Length: 258
Ligand SMILES: C[S@@+](CC[C@H](N)C(=O)[O-])C[C@H]1O[C@@H](n2cnc3c(N)ncnc32)[C@H](O)[C@@H]1O
Image 1 (cartoon, helix red, strand yellow):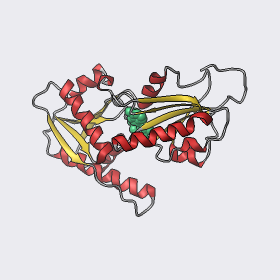
Image 2 (spheres, protein in one colour; image 1 turned 135 degrees about the horizontal axis):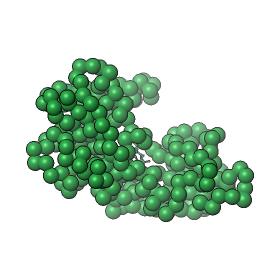
Image 3 (spheres, protein in one colour; image 1 turned 30 degrees about the horizontal axis):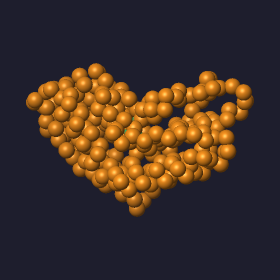
């Protein structure tokens, strides 16, 4: 039976690769590497570095593929859905020309369970029913872990929830379910919309890479510094990936040292 190995590769440092991930990499007959744009070029390079460093199977075929472009003319949901199906078609075509007992490895940034669509796309290939295969998932170190490790903080306060959300959602308003928000995929610098004078922020960009930047402090004091640092870094590198935790005072005060 063919197999798809969905391998979490960590969030930027090749040493995030776990022993399990390295072993999985070496079980693959084919590895698919997505390429596109400045940010994707870095991500593709990082995947190639991982292969150079950890791949010991000389028979493994590494195939690049151009990530299809997401349509922006219809609704966001339709655009994403079409885009996922276009990638599913690439996975399916790759599997179809592989041997019956061969394994396809997909190297997923961070961990596949966190703001990543690879498992959903693999689900589309399965649902189409034209090629049968097993799936195995290898967990990876997420950017959330890299952020918390970089700042030396715990993600949650004692007994309190954390909302993991996107910049787009945060810009629409503070989440109702938590006083702590972990924000990813923020193209709009949504931290600037949080007006709580007591909020604190722990921000990180290019986590785990040689360009890593960490900034933290009272949000009201740091917001403009972070925005400016972000702008300059983006200009210098041509792309940016950042993640941050914002913590507002807990409703029942007097507790919860981080
Ligand atoms: C599509 S999500 C992928 C998340 C990934 N699956 C994970 O486990 O971290 C991309 C977002 O993750 C965050 N991210 C991923 N890698 C990062 C890094 N090295 N430094 C800062 N943020 C990162 C950013 O918020 C970025 O917009």
